[in-house]
Image 1 (cartoon, helix red, strand yellow):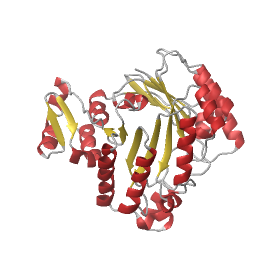
Image 2 (image 1 turned 135 degrees about the horizontal axis):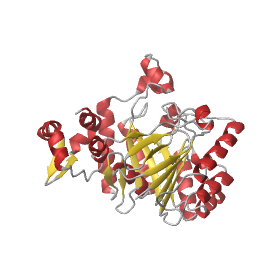
Image 3 (image 1 turned 90 degrees about the vertical axis):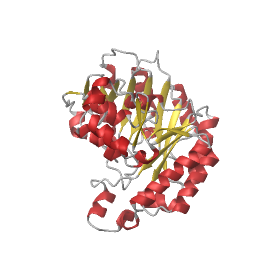
Length: 359
């Protein structure tokens, strides 16, 4: 298994909670970026044929058609099965979907976050629920039925009632895949800085508490399961057979190569990334590779999967104390040689997973 990640770090506007290496840029920067991106892909030595491509960002649905065509033409396609494009609601059209399909894109991830107008306004998003409805219809009519819808639990102003409204829309749209992320305040985002300063802009004064956010997430698990959309990773849910093949590579420690700003790569032994500074990336700066810590990553990344992991004999011995602690507390479950997070453990997964990095 192997994959390719391509970063297109440009947006029409910056979300208040976002601290990704992305944002609004001028035409000259975008043109220089396109040239560097295509060149990096073209000169890459393909030691293995990629089986998946994931175009992320930023907002890759804003990628110029000629750039998208050039990127996909530069990536070996003989073994490609899944090609995903992240899309901001309201940025697609029937003609554009036709271009995407001609380039090999067969899966689209819609960054919806919420279907409630008041919540969207707080984050700086411009779409509405009806925008998403229209986009899903355009995608399906255009031959792309493998659709993911992103939601965030714990957005400013979110309530039990508004969360149910977003979940009702998932039921109405019936996508084969949904992602539910638990909102975390990033202190370097506009919202995060406002929270740190005790302000109220961007909804900083109306953030749900941790218990409410956990309740929203648990409710999503129940609602999605009732629709046949099962959790297979902490934040990802799918009808069986529609799991993200590309993202599964990350959680199973399969190799992948990243191109573009702040793109990460893993060859099975080493990890490396491109700079997160646009100037440095355009200059062709390189980050040195570092040796992957396989045992720590096996737990830190692999335990995110609902199926869990099978620790090696060495790992059972090395992590004996944290395994025993979390089993005793009911946060981990053991079945034969497999370990997995319990239902309760999922809600405190960051603390559990970090314990294995520090062991």
